Image (tube, rainbow, N blue to C red):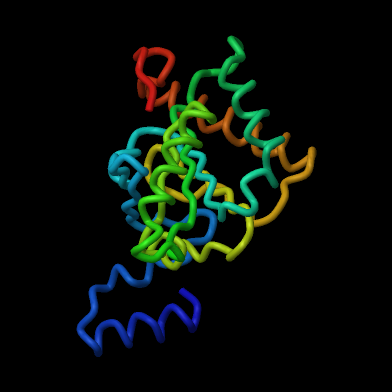
Length: 195
């Protein structure tokens, strides 16, 4: 544990806050902090709902959703690949909606619903900014995080992912999918379910 974490833990204990505050801004290999996000049509998603699945989380502001379009397309293609060991069970798109204030939240919600239909997956909003804070998301950037079936962060990157980075990410996902299969976990393709 580094000095910052020790000081934070001491402050949390001294001030009476739960020790879970230490989980904020997780590094690769650490437990992912709890999160709760909501779609434009009030569908809720929490970290607990993703347990047992490999999750690729894209956390972005509306200005940068196209920055990692190549990654998103590569992952869609990987998911359709019959030779892929069917472990990617969910891609999660989250938009930072913490800047939406009361008179405009209805517009933001309708845009989330509209863009969810366009993308073919539910796009969730981080309405209070907690996920951004707890995960240490880089503001105004495309943040990509992979959380494995056990809730451990296996990858994180802020910014555009280049071709070698996309290949590295795909290889990681293949490894995690194979690990799930060896452990006897049912994957999305095997169970016939999708998020």
